Amino acid sequence: MKDDEIPVKADVENIDINMWSIIGSIIGLPSFIDPVNGITSNFWYAVFVTFLTLALSFVLTYIWGYNDDMVMAEKREKPINPGKRK
Image 1 (cartoon, rainbow, N blue to C red):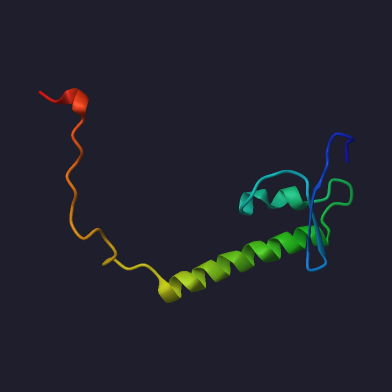
Image 2 (image 1 turned 135 degrees about the vertical axis):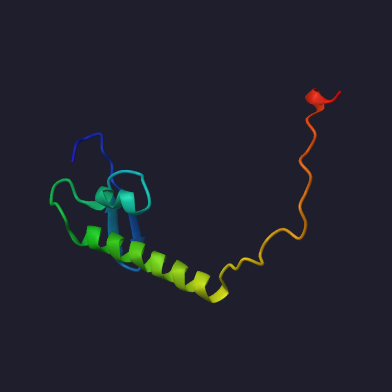
């Protein structure tokens, strides 16, 4: 690790996770790879939590979900642009 890089640390229930950049989602998983030691438990915790979040959000959406009846009760008219009034 370079002198100007400071890892972001989070201690949740004795899980010591280091993140070497600030980026989220699945595309951000490589930021949990230790630049010195390579892939450690740090990376695997991040993978586990990412997929746990995806699975939980899928299940909750499936239970309470969205259906096609969830639309606006009535159509609204487009607002009139005051600059284009005649």
